Image (spheres, rainbow, N blue to C red):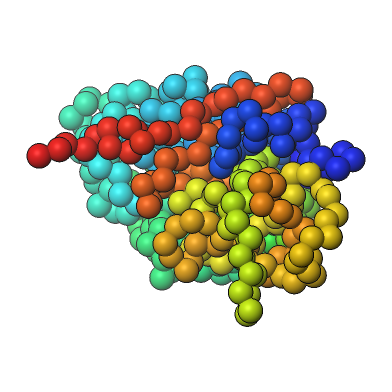
Amino acid sequence: MHYFKLKGKYLYCEDVQVEDLAKRFGTPLYVYSQRTLREHFDKIKKAFKAVSPLICYSVKANSNISILKSLVSRGAGLDIVSAGELYRAMRAGCSPKKIVYASVGKTAEEIKQAIKLGILMFNVESLSELAQINAIAGNLGKKVDVALRINPDINPKTHKYITTGRKETKFGIEIGSARKVFLKRDNYPNLNIVGVHIHIGSQIIQVGPFIKAIKKILKLFKELNKKNIKITYFNIGGGLGIIYDREKPQTAQEFSGKALPFLKEKGLKIILEPGRFIVGNAGILVTKVLYIKENPSKRFIVVDAAMNDLIRPALYGAYHKIVPAKKVTRSQGYKVTRKADVVGPVCESGDFLGKDRKLDVAEGDFLAVMGAGAYSFSMSSNYNSRPKAAEVLVKKNRAYLIRKREDCRDLVGKEILL
Ligand SMILES: *Cc1c(COP(=O)(O)O)cnc(C)c1O
């Protein structure tokens, strides 16, 4: 569900014509629909209403401070993984008391800073990190809340690069070690070990793996309860899949329907960390057709966006729908029925946005790469010395520039000429 719709010949974002935005702000251009992202946030909130969870939007999915603010002002907390994301969270006006902090490699400096700011809790990913936080908290004379990120060893049935809850991945603490930590929690006098965190992967389509993981953790809670160890927080992570192509992911309602019976009984405080679910379909990447190139064996549509703007196709073989910003039927010299690869200007064969697409476009037309709200701009780079794209947030019939297009001075701004 999203608010990018064809009205007549033209693609709209809410009440704004996408082609107009491309002409006004230039391309490549990220365009986001505030209504779409807010409605997705509301959907999760509503689905889990029975346990009134803290919903910590996962900043890494799309970290623009205006996107963060759109959600924070609606009551969202934030899930962060670095000092940079902590900085963004503060700039977006998020209360530290709604910030949870994961990452397998938090530095001492990052930990110190987050403690001083008074975040809600760290999601701790190793025993060494636990000792480190305990020591830093001691030095600062503070008692710090933490959750243990447990790796439940569950296969989420998604792409292996976005699988995070199997034992061979680097994430979290294995359940046996976590149990020992709880039993020996007195070894960490400066910590309150108040919760358990899981996050088993991303773009998960079926509800089964989530429930399996939740059940595994609840079994541990039961064991600990018998030993009079009470857990306050259960952070069930993010990972809800969305529709890019023909996926049929569980809805928030289906997910909560299956999960709530387990979460309700326990009287736990529930935290959720959706990223992609909220912002994935709330963004598109608009790009201009530079050249159409016909080889005997292949047709290419060369566009001005590239893998540095959107790396998901190259990195995961991810599929993004690509549609013209203005729908026209042409009968020019090429056969529309001939499929084309949509490629960028970067010097890599992996630089494609789509393969074998039937697109009736001419040079100078604009295309919209759909489903580019999550892990798109946030993963972009300056490879091939390409300045990063601009970002625009649409609210009803108005469009706001939320990130200026970079220029060549930005590219070398931190460099030192010897
Ligand atoms: C990336 C991440 C998320 C968000 O995942 P989505 O698939 O975008 O919902 C949540 N929690 C943690 C710890 C993450 O690393």
